[in-house]
Amino acid sequence: MENFSINSNIGFRAKPIPKSIIDKTKNELLDKNINRIDIYCHSSADEDTVNSAKVFYNWLTRNGKDVKICVPKAEVEKLYFSSKDYNLKGNSKTIPDKSVVLDFNSKERLGGYYTDLFNSNSPQNIIGYDHHTPSNILKGNFYIDDSAKSCCGVLTRFFEGLGIELPKKDKKNLYCGMVSDYKKSGLVTLNKSQNGYDLVKTDKLLNDKNSLEVFNKIDNSLNIKDKQEIYAHLDPLARLTKDEEQLRKRLFSELQVSPNGKMAYVVIPPNDKLWQKVGMDTPTTSEILKDLRVRVSTNSQKVNMLSDEQKQKMKNVDTVVAFYQKDNEYRMSIHSKSNSALKLIGFIKDNINPDIIAGGHADRAGGKIDSLQPNDVNAFVSSFVKASEIL
Figure 1 (cartoon, rainbow, N blue to C red):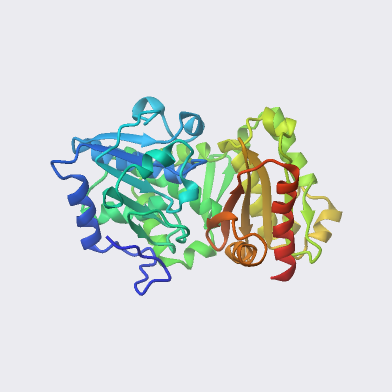
Figure 2: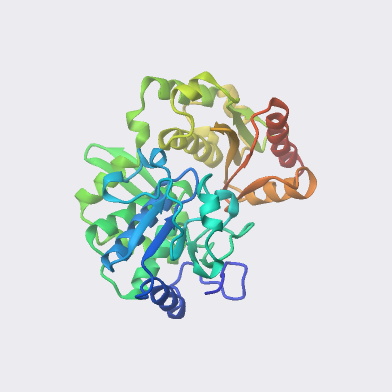
């Protein structure tokens, strides 16, 4: 299996996956001599990686394989995931016959303990499906379509190519991961209404025929009740605790703007008491930060949580960065209306910090440093402010 991306000679752009690649994956994973298979989710697991893993897990177990999902239990507690329905890898050091990597391709996204376990397997026994731009890519056989808007969308094409009619529960899983990532990229919005939620397809999705086709394929296969269940799950802002609501208001009030007015950013300092109180990096706080980044980068003038003075300062903002702590790491997440996320990261790598660990998409990306020291954190934040001034 080859690595494919938007920049390769063959750009699939979310179109059907070549049959030769699908057949190779099927033959390797369903071989009678293959029994134990591990599926890897990326660190700071989200709906797309977890739901991709669930669907792949269900397919493999239906075919008699012994499957484990490599994701910490604590990371899936608030996701569309029931730990009792799936075997998690835990601390087992058993090397599987095959490893499957879903929704990431870089070494930095491997979660702590699982890094050594992953490295114990041979590259020829590793298969990956992803939609992120290749960066510091893992060794193995990866199919990467970085024009696709979610890994669940890529897997929809995979099972489409297999000619399999998936059970409804798997269609719901794919839909959840897809809607979650489509929300992040501004392809859909969820608006609360008297009857539940209305999903709105934005022009960005309507003008992307392949992403739209993949979405409609799953959307049309589910009934209203099933979709409303998923929409409600994907709206944690509707059920915030008092502390989470306090954090959300504080973050909007603490937004800063780069000197040229093009980038807004918020800094949650290491060991911040309120951040620790709400659990630091959780699916809910991730949604709080994402909502802030998307709304301010898309149209700051319509954000009612900003003061008039802030709106005036942010009238030209098109990129928003959130800086925050996750365990012993300090992280950042970017949303950019002008598709400058990877440009910022590239400039920093080339001119300020060649060791920065970061990657993602042109419109949204993430990164980290393995330090909580004030000098390191300040340098990390200032590198993005400096880059925004020059680009």
